[in-house]
Length: 396
Ligand code: PLP
Image (cartoon, rainbow, N blue to C red; front, side, top):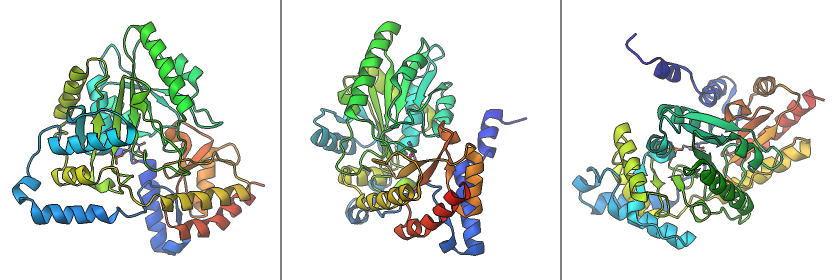
């Protein structure tokens, strides 16, 4: 065969989420979109703020086209990186500079770059806390890494620190966290982050090498009720941040984000150079130039998050009233519902037979739960509640 078996397997196995989404479109054509309740995909439903389109127009009208569409530095335009650093410093009291940032095609590329920069044959284990974004396994594998799963704390979807400690060993290179979390909607509290940092400090000293904390935070600004999302680099010095504008600014198709390597990181300049090297080796240099310029100007702004909060309240309230169990989401736009019965796949199938499309928790490392992406219309949530009731009653 002239192909890599690993890549063939990845390319030919369709994602469960995508498959459901395609199924939803097919069913909508058959029975009408108003009769399908599609909670499958985390595609933002709230438009970008007007400032995004205004900024694009302004750049196209007023900046030389050859510069707008040309290559930037491999790590991104210096002015853009400085603007992002300035915004972070203003919001979080940090002291980042342009040489701490590497612009990427969203969080996916940022994560792949981090794994590429960090994983070695001797230290190839990356620990993920369930429930977690399924692509972590694919991205870590690409760097020759192995994803080690820590079981979920299903009480509050914080971190089971005892289980995490048990998972750390001599081959541990990094721990990856994601808060606000996809799929649980949980936000890790300051207490959780403080305890996590203390554990990683202690285990790093024991192992004689630093364990890197990778904070994957595309939902940082998607939080409700004025909740504070601790800025992780302030609690643990060996933290790398993977950020994306896909969700905060509803720009997932524009593919823009960054890796942040704070100065406090051990051997900062070498780690940053390794990030640049991983970007180079993956061909992830010079993130989309126009989008770099746009986010450089609007970074810190967000889409109208209050619309997701309204959806959260409507869906969470409605499901609880029916009798379902779930932890109230504090951020992102996902709700992690405890299944009825004891077979997650059967629950998904029964929901699907009612045209209610929900994603099994299995791919997120957490069976017994399903994910509902509520970045949908308010109307669809309202129409879906009687169907959730029907599903509930079918288990009584
Ligand atoms: N990390 C998490 C937790 C996500 O939910 C997603 C996308 O849904 C990503 C990373 C990738 O995001 P991006 O569109 O920025 O590549």
